[in-house]
Length: 344
Ligand code: AHG
Ligand code: MN
Ligand code: MN
View 1 (cartoon, rainbow, N blue to C red):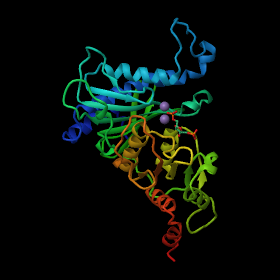
View 2 (view 1 turned 180 degrees about the vertical axis):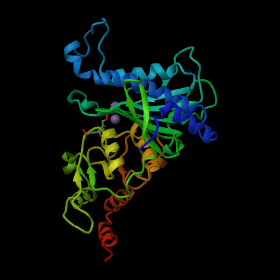
View 3 (view 1 turned 135 degrees about the horizontal axis):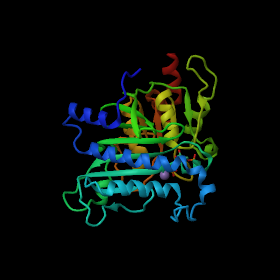
View 4 (view 1 turned 60 degrees about the vertical axis):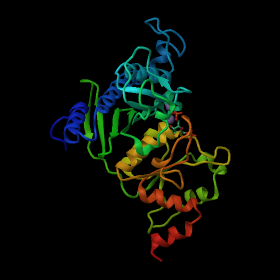
């Protein structure tokens, strides 16, 4: 029970006072993203009214064109971040190339990579969707930022977070000093601290994967998921299957309850579907800061050096013991897992 309401900005400034060496001005970038999130939230909760007020592509009552929600989210974040003077360059899942700061706008020393709207296939069904972001220091020295500024390994991140739009909207972030969650209170327009210092269980009982792809998986992946579904009291199996289809929602649930999220590469897409810069790296930073783990099957996601903006990566994410066991299955070491867990 928290005995007083702490807003996101109060919390961020307090952290800044306590760790002046770690924070710096990028905390204002975080608050700018929170502002954009409030604007996106407003549009998300009205999304169901699009059919009433005007379909996508048509004009709304103000005579403005009704945008697709993912494009709206991208534009909103760009509008807010473009004018702050803190950023050198931005990369978005919705844009093929890097997005320079607008002409004449001041240029700063930070970089933001973001997925403006994650889970977009769920928009029309009123299922949770989200925004994921990653803040990095620029590496280029002056002028407009470059693509190299965006293509940095996850371990270089200063801050990563997500906003989950839903029955209650939440913002969860890390700056490398634990993971903190805030719940949006629309009546006062503030994110209030509701989940300080989130820790994820070392082992969960949930697995989250699109099992419709089973036929395309590797033998190791098939064997792991088959194993999770087998009955065995000693190792607390079977696990429960939970899959929303919005990474941010699946990740958030597993972060709190424990479990593993899997999006493997397969015969058709060897690197899977999820993007390293906008999804893998930021969620890996958060997972690790909460005591979890994130792997591409053999390597730590945080150590992967991206070579292109929309690079995809297999992703195994969640409770550390589950991720480690999954890696062993993928490496064909499934027999060793049984020995370790049963001690025989
Ligand atoms: P996005 O909406 O940003 O394109 O991301 C969709 C991603 C992710 O949110 C989700 O976990 C995954 O796609 C679901 O993919 P499948 O439909 O293949 O399961
Ligand atoms: Mn996404
Ligand atoms: Mn998206």
